[in-house]
Image (cartoon, rainbow, N blue to C red; front, side, top):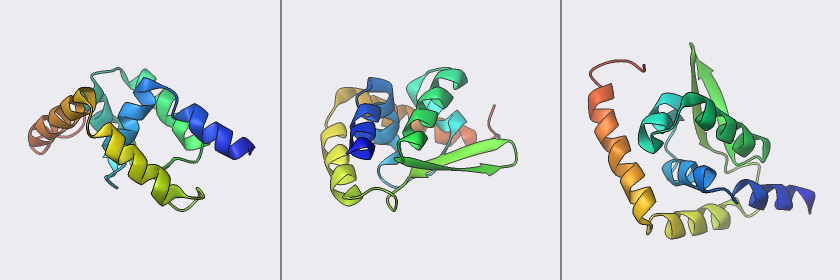
Length: 116
């Protein structure tokens, strides 16, 4: 029961929901990618990603100096249902659609240079 409460508590924040909307379609993103999409500073994004990681919702990996995050579908009971529901609910929102638009725009620029 405690783990389930921690999951829902982690999802009870707008910024964390916006991050999950970027990751829920099994995309692996660097912190700098998420910063660009949400237009928030690295410290804010990292704090929220840490919360999501501690709840078991995301996994991280280091590549050089960069941290990459993706949805963790293996550690959570009923993960498919939770993530499918999140995806369906979040993709209908104007804010998450705008975040996705900014992320796509950022990727066109990022392909020409490395993370800043």
